[in-house]
Length: 111
Ligand SMILES: *[C@@H]1O[C@H](CO)[C@@H](O)[C@H](O)[C@H]1NC(C)=O
Ligand SMILES: *[C@@H]1O[C@H](CO)[C@@H](O)[C@H](O)[C@H]1NC(C)=O
Ligand SMILES: *[C@@H]1O[C@H](CO)[C@@H](O)[C@H](O)[C@H]1NC(C)=O
Ligand SMILES: *[C@@H]1O[C@H](CO)[C@@H](O)[C@H](O)[C@H]1NC(C)=O
Ligand SMILES: *[C@@H]1O[C@H](CO)[C@@H](O)[C@H](O)[C@H]1NC(C)=O
Image 1 (cartoon, rainbow, N blue to C red):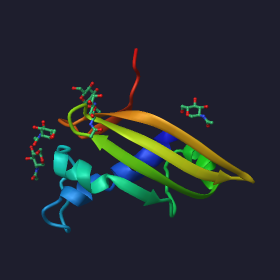
Image 2: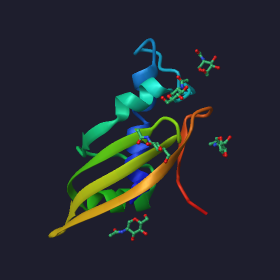
Image 3: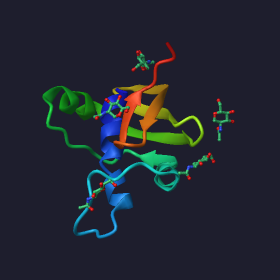
Image 4: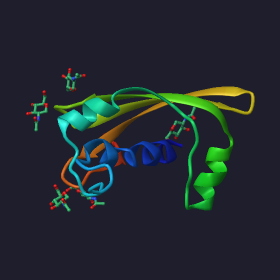
């Protein structure tokens, strides 16, 4: 489930960094400043996906919030997510690896 959340927030990054809101640059690199801007608590409001499988997953979420905790030196973001799905409250956390050059995040794997 981490992927849909991350896609949703990542789509905000270019807007945060854009100099002109009318003309966002979609290849801006991730900086310490933009990491600070996404840091903290986020509430899930809604989502839109092109892929049917993400759509299906996201439609199950009744409520949710998540925390981003970036680490500037490690270039990682700790993602802690809380979701209400059905009558269950689900907590999950994962580390995301930041590739600053091309502004992408990937699921972090220790191995
Ligand atoms: C967008 O940002 C990239 C990376 O910083 C830069 O190479 C490119 O020239 C920028 N494009 C525009 C239209 O500003
Ligand atoms: C970032 O990660 C390094 C190495 O694990 C750790 O020493 C440091 O305290 C972390 N910084 C923050 C702000 O969590
Ligand atoms: C980002 O922050 C880290 C840790 O504070 C620092 O070592 C690094 O030089 C900073 N990078 C930039 C581009 O400012
Ligand atoms: C947490 O996420 C991992 C990786 O996406 C997944 O394998 C695991 O089943 C999840 N745990 C829970 C309790 O949802
Ligand atoms: C971004 O850069 C990293 C490291 O240079 C690379 O592994 C990854 O495939 C790149 N991702 C994209 C979407 O270009």
